[in-house]
Length: 253
Image 1 (cartoon, rainbow, N blue to C red):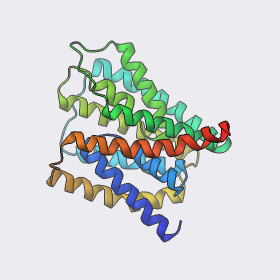
Image 2: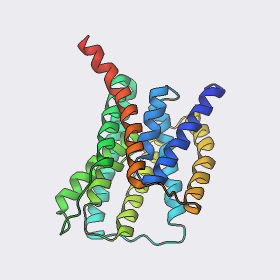
Image 3: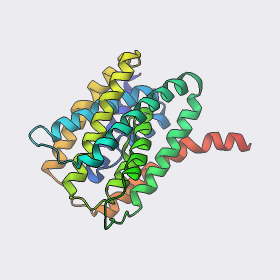
Image 4: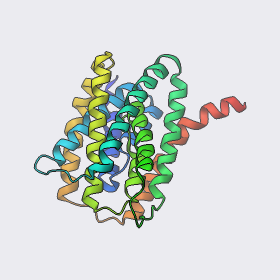
């Protein structure tokens, strides 16, 4: 990567971090989408960077706090999500070797769906969802986590519909994503898929992400949350469509 590419990568990291701190949503997909559109690094390398940053975020969050979790549904959901991660990593290896263009198309579809989920208002349920519903959403999240290191959208939508305290929802998401990130990193390291490029990009991104997170906590944004959500929606939609439209248009031509 050239110096300009590294600077562009850090700009993408900063934009994704700011969006994450303002909305609590989709850091991985934003970073993956922007870097894919700009062709800065391979999807596999950027996904590995995201996995490490997810673990750092969890370590910062739970450094002095014990997570609040609803174990009767969280335990089985975590197990199914881990199985999904294994399937997602296997798919990533196949796509990376055989169908890179299809992988970019799937990422674009995931980003577009994520964009609409961001602005979709999920009404809270009067009663907790059934265990099969938790298993379904956690399985889909696991596959996304294995493929793109971004398991967020399905479980974010599902958990925010539960009649749980806000801290329990947030803690459940962070623990689930961190556990998925650990398994994903173990699998990619075991298969020799964590390159030196991913290592150096992680070192570049880590101080920036930690610094922006610290600033966001020390100086919370006063922007109306709806305006922020719309801005992030537009950003995600542009990145997603930039990945989805080229192969679709080439097929129609």
